[in-house]
Length: 378
Image (cartoon, rainbow, N blue to C red; front, side, top):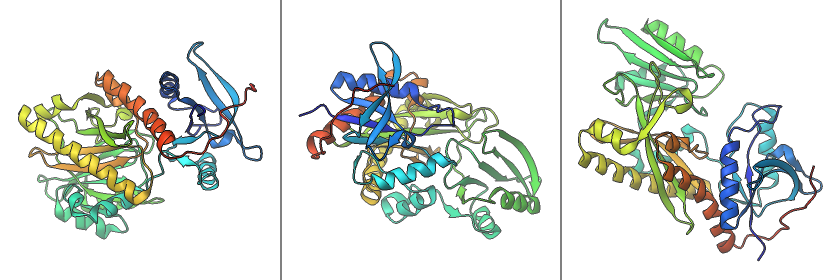
């Protein structure tokens, strides 16, 4: 049996061909070599369609250097592409369509609104979903404001905490609202008080040119005033089964309405944060176990609905009573939350598991063999 080959599919960030997760790919290629998996990185731009060759990025762990090599198509593809507003993303869509017959470890998920609707169809998950509407007019805003004093406006396709508004109805002065948020470039919008009429106008302008959700706010403000949530990573293991790899707490930057690390937040161990938030080790342990059960069931459910998946990150809100809410589901999760929380073993596992799962797929799914590589170098 030839050595199995995994291609990590990604997108360049710009015309200079920069890659966002190059250090992660370097670690994965090195880990892959140790377990007998040949791994390279490529983008749709690197594919020579007529010759069925890829001008791939390869890393040599012995020299510590990257280079380009012409490679045949891999046995399996690990899709790490995130949504971009670019011609590169359109090229990705064409690639996925043309090579749909190949073995992908993971298929794209739908937008946040479709995921919310899908979860809401099943009572098991409905209880863990914040009240959410697709914003179509000011009437949707008014309807959500009747349900609670805090709501969020968020883009249906957004990532990294971009484009989010937090709105809170104030008791004093009555009829006024506090708004704060993050623009698409992640810049913080500082808190300010506005009237109801002004709020309606701001939200209408905010939602122009895209699809936005209006979502119930869960009380997540820590005693120091910062917001927090939890990032849970579930992945397929080397036996092809879903497992929780780890869970970490995220605490947002000062004056931020989100906890995203890219927005200045920091990570802590979930057990530590939960114990402080819920008041006891027993309650924290119970919430961790319930979260794990929810995450594994959610992953299996979404895979059944949308096709092959190998990992998911679930962003969870846990209120003071220990009730768990799924805020978002991310099929292309970053792993640095574990490194930043000091949990180096979970970070290592998070990188290794997709590789171990790829080996399992190769051995158990009858993946078609293709030549591993050509030795031609640039």
